[in-house]
Image (cartoon, rainbow, N blue to C red):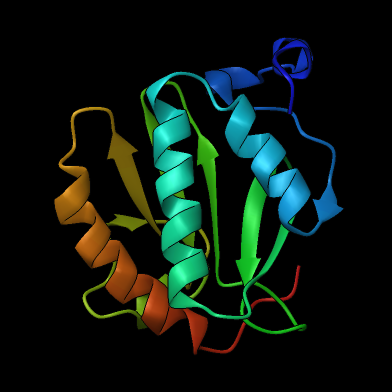
Length: 142
């Protein structure tokens, strides 16, 4: 994504980039490139962790957020920007050990909020474990 495209990308509430839906790596990379400030580094790290942990990962942007799947049936993880954090959504998070810390109104979903001053190296280790676990659970169709 060029600088002029980044500057034209509308940021929704909380700084979440408005990216057209699409399948594949390109829309996900466009989303990450449009993430504001420090959140862009978080997006790159998340994308890299998933790509390294899940050899044949499937990617898409839906509802203005990247989604990751391990098969053709559905998804196991997504993330989006909020004002003070990037929220990682584990779609079968209640099945992970340990469970991600933040509950959801959806029965199986759990969240992890990553803030600017969080220790990213420490988070990466836990995220890698959750990603590996989540990628082999039944996916969620959306």
